[in-house]
Image 1 (cartoon, one colour):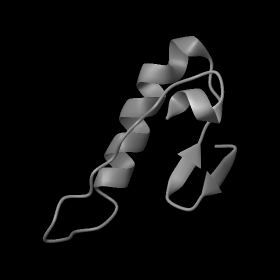
Image 2 (tube, rainbow, N blue to C red; image 1 turned 90 degrees about the vertical axis):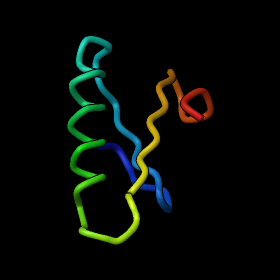
Image 3 (cartoon, rainbow, N blue to C red; image 1 turned 90 degrees about the horizontal axis):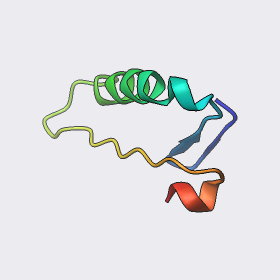
Length: 53
């Protein structure tokens, strides 16, 4: 993880590791707390932060 900006996490990873990273981060974020509403996690991929949106 490179940085956190408000409610976003920014990672740098090799292309072959992206699926593994995405699955792990999504799972951890979605199960971080037990709430009455689901925790929704979106994942964007790009060569820079702008492209990932």
